[in-house]
Image 1 (tube, rainbow, N blue to C red):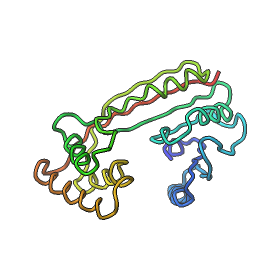
Image 2 (tube, one colour; image 1 turned 120 degrees about the horizontal axis):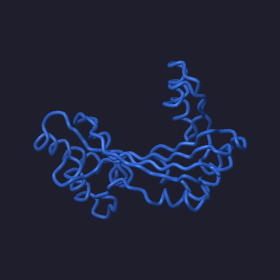
Image 3 (cartoon, helix red, strand yellow; image 1 turned 180 degrees about the vertical axis):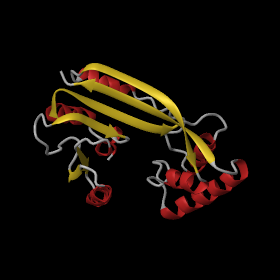
Image 4 (cartoon, rainbow, N blue to C red; image 1 turned 90 degrees about the horizontal axis):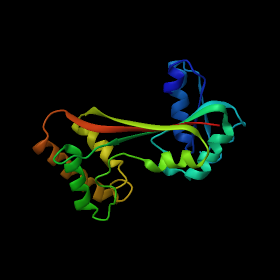
Length: 203
């Protein structure tokens, strides 16, 4: 949607018909030159050499990286670019993300993602090993405002909470998180997030 808002012809891909329906409706409402198709990153169904840019935002870790990289090479024109972007909160000692992760671990001691710093060297390696040229990466940290309600919503979608705990357990966790936020972080929250991007050009 962001590319279309800048006047580019854009094609969005997802495996969920429901999400594609919402995206299509929003694009039409905004008058954006975007179309949306159902498909997988590893098998897009798009024409060979049909795109100048392939981007993956906040999703690469769900893919078979080797197959998705091969598919990106297939649908890119020569000289086209693959861009992988990631956006992760950063838990620093005592900040709201850190205290939230402590609570997640209380409810889900087996969760292995606590303390993540949002750096993805495996993405750089994937592009290097696939023959892309001018492979580069960069990162920066941005402060993102959240209300208590929106942070709780964000955390309910965390792989250590909504994807791992039963419905009643999630409700108990959410109640404890609401209490923690009211007690330790009154007012609007500001949560540091790291943007990490990797890109390369098809040889």
